[in-house]
Length: 207
Image (cartoon, rainbow, N blue to C red; front, side, top):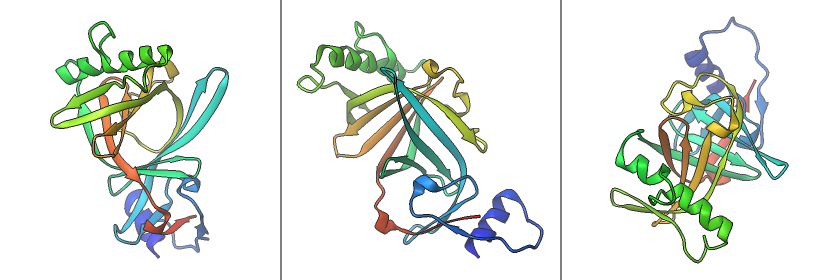
């Protein structure tokens, strides 16, 4: 079985015993050790999950990040699934880092966006962050806390704090219409993704 082979490869061979297979309907139901089978992109094991919450004006919202053995990360928010297949790290102390995190007075994109949100001008006067040959329009910012299952040793992710205020996320829309997720802990991870259609998924399995 696909599930057994992938689980053994990542977590080690298990004693021979029957394993009941759970079939789920949505990536949002996947747990660490579960398998997602794509029609065109092969099979992948969920190696790590982050269950995130964000507090906003006394209300909490929740969504999930699923890290796959094949490299991509899937974000689930309600019925919407986004797959991020590329990650770039913007290191602290670089010019790009300063252009994102600097003060509004110095033209820092995140603080300028938040200032325009408070003024109600972020739609008519959008904030655009430029990196290399790309242009990215800021659409939201926030902070988050999360619970984790599984290892997370990559830069930025391994530095997630237990203090919600020290974990910043932001969303941008690229000039070609792609979705960009930013995560700022120490350095900044920029993830480029797209909507994941249900038709791309062949099956979702777990024990």
